[in-house]
Image (tube, rainbow, N blue to C red):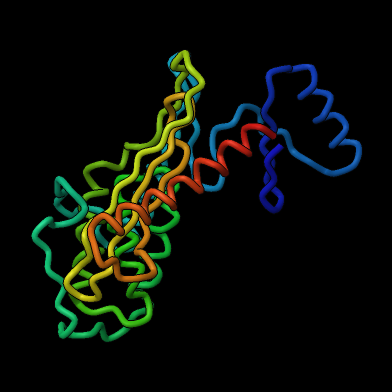
Length: 229
């Protein structure tokens, strides 16, 4: 049973046990049974014979409406590969709007690992954004406009392997710190991912890679213990 404030998800392989648990909860609390899981905290859940799909399409559309970019022209990727940040660019007159949109984008990464790196980049400037940073935010929104139906699919793949992939870039032009990135798969399904700037400046590209590997290894060990429980 997963609990978030006053919302509950009950999952299990025995329908009789689930029914019994619901009955016991109803005896102690005033609850409403909404039936099969469809929406939870803005995340849409769709189950079929092929597997389980979750996305935040409605959340994306609402976000585009709030940003007044519902009718914007889509782009093919969330970040320009040739982008060079200029710290001397003009600062934003007000950062409240920027912070609001970035905060919503952070929540969107729950089902959209494809924007995790770019959202990680813009979230580093929450307290002092410049006009160029807001331009990146707009590009992410334009990318989401054309990909609002994307999400995460979970299927039965016939094995129980736990696998991880990791990488890092080689610093950046502003503070020379590299970014760690990894994704973890359980039974062939994506369950965990991360994109975060490293806390120190690596003196070699190999050092940056090893730091990324260490972070990914910690996540794999955590998953192993979780599955053992």
